[in-house]
Every structure is written in structure tokens, then in C-alpha cells.
Length: 288
View 1 (cartoon, rainbow, N blue to C red):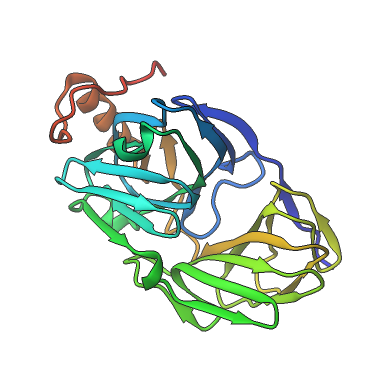
View 2 (cartoon, rainbow, N blue to C red):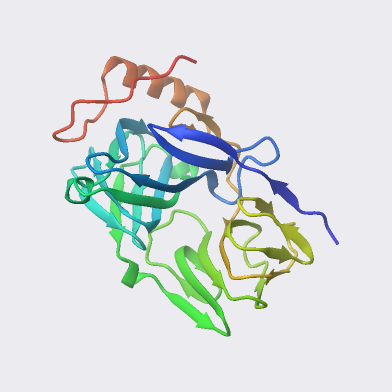
């Protein structure tokens, strides 16, 4: 049996929201197009407070936000203004320059709220790195579901497990939420060259190897593996085709060419960047 690469995430804080971040890591820089994986831990916000990620820039990637609990308001420099509910997909492709804001909607902020979810970054293929930005919202009802023998699969983006999502991914992608009842199994096929499993909740094994909660296991290429639920489990299965070359990540910028990142840093620092309508506050460029 091939040994799994198992990653324990590091704890971070993003504008007051606690997260766990297994990708990127020293052991693994990317899985398919996924170069960033943030687990926004369940957080209770008191009345009058909430998450508030101020205006900040991106290039060369798509962000995908998916919530298990709570809601977020997404605003961007394209003019998008969307409340994202649990189970919805918020998909934003940065292209050469985009800025966005994510915050707790005012309607629920006054009463207090909870937030729990994921935000991932998918590196754009080289021929899309400098293209136009794009935003789309996909309701929970639009995402395909398979529910069979105690295993429910919701296909968030891409294709897999005989399902296909409406989210407009830019390269072959697999991103699925899986709920498994105790003692059920799921065969993870090798239809995508690169795959990983992240355990949100419960006790699971992958081909007999125990997976701890909040661990990320990178599967060997070309090998089918079986996920076994020792208890009721909640996991994410994701991956896709390998990137078309290495990517550099610097702050909120992802690119195949370091010169693109340096140019983006200079533009943001100088205020030469598209702005989110109605927003004045922004996150300043951190010192290298």
C-alpha cells in the first residue's frame, strides 16, 4: 500500500475569523488547481458583530466560498453584490485585477450569527491568468446530489462521482461534499489525476489508514482508494488535473510569472486598482 501524504493544518486568523489552512503546506503546494484551502471554523458572532474582510485584491485565481452555516455578503469591483447562504456557491474569477469584500450581512448582524464554511483558491490556467474577471452565484438547489446507501455526495464544482456542477471552472476539477453514515464506504476513483480528502467531522479510514479530524490526506496518483466511516462523517473530496506549471503565491496574488505578482503589488500599493462600489476601507499591502 502506498503511504498517504497527511497534512495537519496550521491555525490562522483572517480579520478576526479563525481558520485552519492545510494548503499550501511544506508537504504539498497544490492538489489539482487547488492552491489554497481555508476552513473557516465555526464561530459565534455576538449581536452587532460579524466577519468583515475589507476590500482586498486578487489576480490569477478563482475563489470559491461554500458555507455550512451562516451567510456572507459578497461585493466586488465588477459591481456584484450577493448574499451567499449556506449550501450556495460563490465563484469569483480574478483575471488580471479584481477586488472584493466579504462580510456578515447587516440583516443578521444585528441579531448575532454563526459562520462555518470553506474558502478555496483555484489557480487559473496560464491562458486565463490575465483575462477579464467574472462572478457567479449558484444556489444550493442548483448543485447535483447523489444519495445512496448512507452516502450523500454534493458536487460543488467540476465533475466526479457521475455528477457535474454548473460552476464555470476553468480546468478539470473535482470538489465534493460527502456525508457518510457509520460503517458506510465510498470508493474514490482515479478519474482525476490529483485528489485529496479533508475531514471536517467524524472518524474515517482511507484504505485502513486512520484519518484524524481536520487532517488533509493527499491520495497517490492513479490509485483507487476506499473511504470508510467509523462514525458519521463529514468530508470534502477535491482535486483535478495538475497545474500547467508551478505557481507563486504572494499575499492574495497567484501567478505563473513573478513579474505579474510584483506588478500587482505595486499597483495595489499605489491605489491603481479597480474598486468595490461604495467601499472606502481596504487592506493595505503587507510588507514583504
